[in-house]
Image 1 (cartoon, helix red, strand yellow):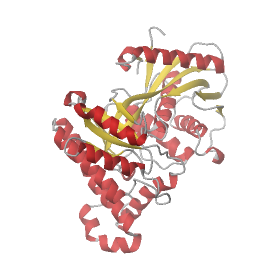
Image 2 (cartoon, rainbow, N blue to C red):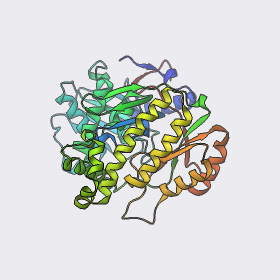
Image 3 (cartoon, one colour):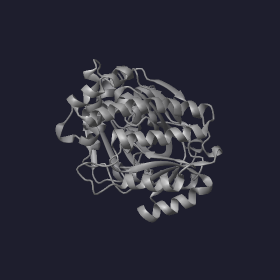
Image 4 (cartoon, rainbow, N blue to C red):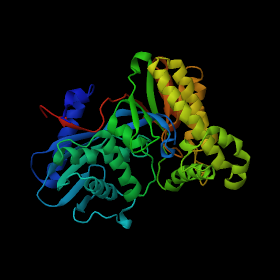
Length: 415
């Protein structure tokens, strides 16, 4: 894939982005010395429908957003990869002759870097030595998938520096997921990486995760008169891996009792017929989470259909229904180990009081901490922002746009 022009990638705020790219180039030079570099960009993502359905091979509606991670990178003759991020001290260094998982690296950026390099090689792609300096706008713990954006940026660098851009978006997402699952130690589904890799509004069907069915959904959100808002409630995802891991584990436990490995391969009628038996054996929470899967799997498909048909009121009603299913059945608004902190629940309750009958609101991403998503009528945006930020602080409400491009090499005609 050829590089995408800078002006095409950034439709607004170009001068601020140029200054950002100059800062990244200067950061590369400060850490690695002078040299010709290429630039790469990967977006964050917003999950619109299908909360925790991907890991059970369900349907998802997601979109890439205009907040991205940018890397300046260049190949080197050494068989080493070095990466420095603007936001963190220290430089990760991976020796390419030793790409086996390192237990002590779990949960670190070095694990993701090693995992991406290892999986690219396993799939037959060339991986040479390179140096990279990154800077991100994708807020950590925001539910916008900062880790997936980072992973896709790494795959994109390898694709273009060593493989003529030959790693397609679906394979890139699968490589990134492998690194996160096997090396980083987080059992995520494929949705985050796929949304960051593909770009735009995308309906995804993961019945066969090796061959996901993707459909781009063209919908001009701004022309509908609505803004997409992500509200940061001040929580973060630290120490919540166990909470996330319990969701797919409990869903799959229900599936196994019904003769399948994932819930997508279970008939909803069979699940309902044996619900009483299942709750006795596995507990109520596992049954509720399975019930959510069936509900939200259908809602994600209905949301995509509404957007294609330009039925925005129908879309909004299904977003609200999805959020209610997450709250009631999936139960991922707060951690049971920390019930005093319920920022997500509070933000959703406040959004409902402001937007009832006029917009939509739901938990965003993995849940338990972090962010909610709201679709807000443009004429109510400042009112909504003011009331939300009065509770959660100035800058808590982020107004985003949908980005059509996924992970890309960026072509600059001038700095």
